[in-house]
Length: 153
Image (cartoon, rainbow, N blue to C red; front, side, top):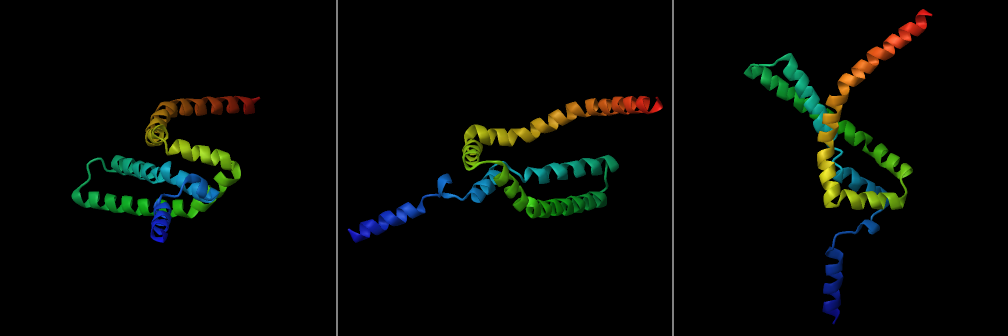
C-alpha cells in the first residue's frame, strides 16, 4: 500500500504544471514564449539583410561572408537587447492585465487557433506595412503641405 501511494505521488508530480499553478510572472513569460517574441529578432535581421542586399545586390564571396558576419552580429545584439528588456515586458503585462486576463490570453495563445494566429500575424503585419507605407508617405507629404500653408499665413 505504501509503495502504491509513493508511485501515485511520483506520477502526480510528473504531470506538467497547470496554468493555475504558475505565478502571474511565469504565465506572462509563457505568453511571451508562445507568442514568439523572438520574431522581433527575425524581423530586424530580415530588414538588415534587405538593406545589405540593396547595397550589394550581387555580392562577391568575400562580401557574402562579411554580410553573414554582419547578420550574425545584428542577431546577437538584438537577442541580447530583447533579453535585457524582457523583465520590463513582463512587468508591463503584469501591470496592464489582470490575472483572469492573463489566464485567458495564455489559454488562447496555447490553443491551436491562437498558435496559428501567432505564426501568421507577422506575415499579415508585413503585408499591411507594405500596403500602408505609400499611404503614410503620401499622408506625410500632405501634412507637410498643410503645415507650410499654415505658416505662410
